Length: 125
Image (cartoon, rainbow, N blue to C red):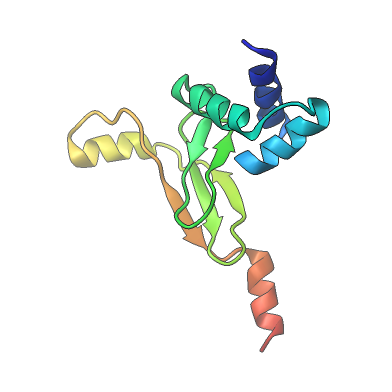
């Protein structure tokens, strides 16, 4: 593993959230000022293919990267875009029973309005 790839992976693994490539690049530049944005994007692609990390695609927003590659779902606030992990237990088994096919993997992003945004909506009334 190259030192750039290790740095990018360490940044993702130490994050408490789901960072964008730009956020990862900014953080990587603090440690390795010579790193290029292209290097970050290329390594994110390689790490996603190798299933070391998970890419979360969100329409009309930058992709985010997740350190957890195991089965889990995401909540995305429709207003502010905050992204959170959730785990709906036995969802894969349920889907397999309902469809009658073996599910290899899936992605589920649930949209909602977070409590912070609900509070702001209530204060505008």
